[in-house]
Amino acid sequence: MKRPYNIRATIRTAAAVLLLCAPAKAMAQEAKPFAPKLFGVLKTRFETDTQTGDLRFNINNARLGVKGEAGGTAGLFRYQFQADLNSEGKLSILDTYVAFASGAFEVSLGQQLYHFGTELSRGPGKNYFASSSFLTTYVGSYYTERNDKISAAAGNLGARDIGILFTYKGTEQFPVGILAGLVNGYGINNMAWHRNVNFVARLWIDPGQVVDGFGIAGNYYTGKTPLGNDITMAGGELRYMKERWIIEGEYASRWLGTASGTDRLDLAAVHAIYRQPVRQWGPVKFIAPMIRWDYGRNIALLDQSDILHLNAQRITGGLTIGFAKKLLQCELRLNYEHYLIDRRPAAIEANPAFHNKFIAEFFLAF
Image 1 (spheres, rainbow, N blue to C red):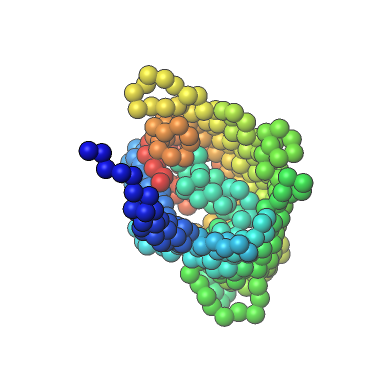
Image 2 (cartoon, one colour):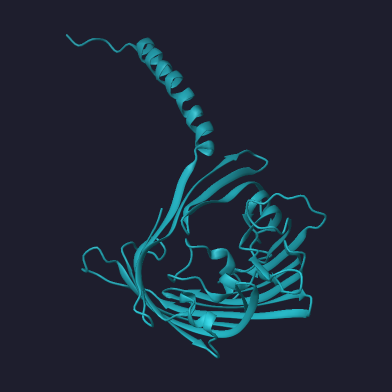
């Protein structure tokens, strides 16, 4: 005999299910914004110096970070921590900051990228080539000259600093991004007391926002170095990104106050990349031939107790074999770097950083 339909029992069962599910759903909604996300970059390589025949296996970067966010109706808080577990054999703390965003506006406070240009801000996770460009490596360089009392000293501001950044990311009605901020000027992990702050600013239009595929940006930085020099950096960039093509060019100058006058450094980088998807190549999803031209005029290098200056160009040809659908995810990079230097003093001749080399690098980002 079929049991009669009991509406009261059905209501009680439904109510019990709702009571059980509602807290779980609420907890999930509350926990989700706070749940941290792990990310990282691993770059391992084999490289050979084609001028001397020397070779080595190298772990170039092993970066690991965590980021997350906590939202509300008024805005959104986010945070990020990141460290490089093998920065030339050492542990290096990179990002430690908190940001608050509301609409197109954001303010961030802590140790972070200060965003002077796309090249300097790339880092290993967004660099398409095995090696960084001259612009990335040298734009923040500074030094003091040797005299009767002291030896020469040199350093680099790097891509990160501790400070506060204000950002307007642009809207459809006004697609211009604006960044302005104040930083210590001492680089990462240095919280020394001082009486000056350095100023950074950037204006940009992302590719495709106004003109199909094209983007443009201007960058500015001024202040003091840790050695007390006056330093100013300024530059511009033009980018084209559409379908399978990436073509980017950036130029920057650095003016440094020294005992003998103002030292000017000029740097440029231009690269072109074409991503060609492939089928039925097993795990290979695409191949991407690429080429880059680097230029540096008046690069200053510390040689024991003195400063050397040189002009250099570099041409890098490469082929990236991708194991994911997009660039900068999982790939094998084959790069050859050829250096063109106008003069080679003994110290430069002995420096492997300016030697022609072949690099095979495995890149993994998650």
